[in-house]
Image (cartoon, rainbow, N blue to C red; front, side, top):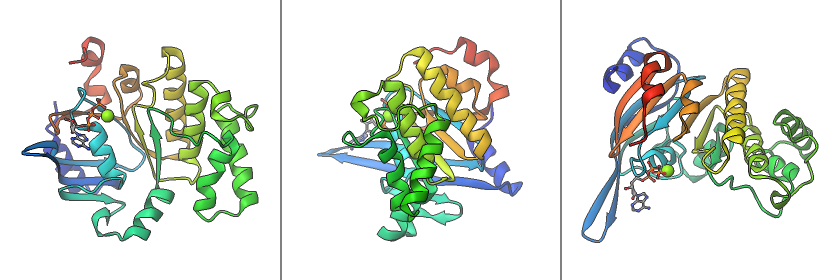
Length: 256
Ligand SMILES: Nc1ncnc2c1ncn2[C@@H]1O[C@H](COP(=O)(O)OP(=O)(O)OP(=O)(O)O)[C@@H](O)[C@H]1O
Ligand SMILES: [Mg+2]
């Protein structure tokens, strides 16, 4: 199994193009007298166009790592670089721009706007991103067709199934042609079959558009389509491996 530090350094030595690099990221939550080290020195380098799955038991720090990479939370110490930009150095406007234009977010609970139609949900981030309304709407229709919702453009979330709502969330995440998709357990609330469809869709978009995908998951099907898999434990990277290095483990692995 590859040592995380070794993998990271090898990538840098080879000057491989990367999209995300974290360096010794620590996140400490203080709760009265006690403290939780949700992230405890995470250094990982993710190449442009890679599909990365993050695995690990509940509480191991996956969502916290996500929030750190996505600029949704400020680490206690350490650095996060997106396309060589140190996220900590950005002011509020620059950070908002990065979140809007560079990163697409997909959450376990979909998080699409309940009072808006599928079309409005996907159009909105493009309007925020400065795309003219007519063009934004045309592009939203195209993306929604792409995720199989061409017949559901005017449905609101309550008129859509869970899998369809997650498709809207995927369409929204891809709307501004981001460099990175961050997906936090996107299939956790879906049945097996629908979950597989969502996984296939994310992989297709990753391959067609060359978007870097970082996806936390408990779903072993996700591992089959990943380029590399990162295992977390107690806020640390336990190991990183390429897909072809973990064949046997995937088939025998049980959730801890
Ligand atoms: N806002 C917070 N305040 C205090 N502690 C927190 C906070 N957010 C997370 N934690 C703690 O940090 C640790 C990591 O949490 P995190 O949500 O990153 O885990 P996770 O790997 O995503 O788990 P799951 O698989 O259940 O989603 C946990 O021990 C959690 O209790
Ligand atoms: Mg989580």
